[in-house]
Image (cartoon, rainbow, N blue to C red; front, side, top):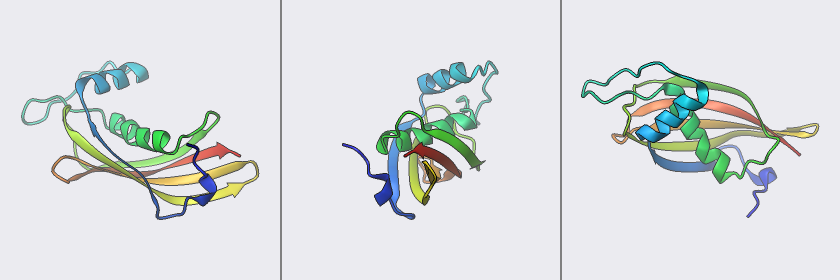
Amino acid sequence: MSVDYSKLLPGQRISNQTYVLDAGTVSNYAEAVGDLTQLYSADDGRPLAPPMAIAALSLRGVVNDLEIPGGTLHAGQEMRFSAAVPVGETLDCTATLAQNSVRGEWRFMVVRLEVEDSKGRAVMDGKSTIMLPI
């Protein structure tokens, strides 16, 4: 099934995924970005996940649900992290379309991202701008 990006409207929820931020996911992220630092620990002794691993995970749903094609550019992002997240936590990642416009040969989509932990506490919010070739 192919997504018709021209029919997506600002305010529309475009992705809602739940993920477990397990040790394998965190390890794969750390290896991919070359992060060799030791993780900090939460009060209960569990290691904490790197904040940008949470951002990458939140974007996974957008990429998959919108069937983002090759040649797409990640043009910008602004993220705010409001709580540390221990490895093993379940995260609810929601993405809402904030802007959808065309300029020249490119479609610009701004996506608002919100991530909550298993207690419903906000741990990250922000926005990401992607450019899709037309």
